[in-house]
Length: 203
Image 1: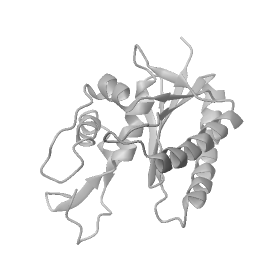
Image 2: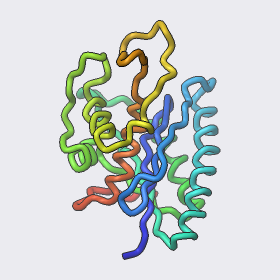
Image 3: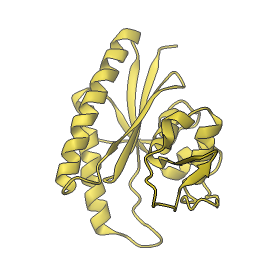
C-alpha cells in the first residue's frame, strides 16, 4: 500500500491548529496564533506564510517516502445556534480560499469535513462533556481523547499567566491548559485514515 500523508487543519482567525499524520500516525502538531494581528488581512497573510513553510516540509517528506498528500479542513458551518451569520461566512470563506489556493500551489488535493463527522469517527461521539475547569464542553472530549492517545505533549500549554482562572488546570503544583485547536487538527488529520470518510473536495 502506498504511503499517505494527511494535513489536518482546524482553521480560525484566532488560532489555527495544523497537524500532519502519515500512514495513520501523528508526525507533527502545532498552531499559528493570529489573534494579535491588526486585522483579518494580516492574519491571512501570516497564516499563508506559515502554511507555505509547512507544506514545503511536507513536500520533502512526500518525495522521500513517495507518498500521496491530501489536506483536510473543517467545513463551514452555515448556521450557528439556529442563525445564519453572513459576516462569519464571508470571513471564514476568505480564510478557506487562502488555504485552498496554498494547497493548490503544491498540487495537494484539499477536502472539507463536517465537525460532527470527524468527532464521531475519531473521538467516538460528537457531544460535549462538562468539566470542572471551565473548558468549553464541546472541546473537552477531543482533549481527553488526545491525552488518552499520548498526544498530551502536543496540546498542553503552560503559558497561562497567574491571573487567569477559567480553563486552567492546577495539578501537582503546575498550572496549564490545553490548546483545543491543535487537538482538533490532530483528530482531523487522523480522520483521513478512517473508514467511511465523508469528505467534500474543495476548489
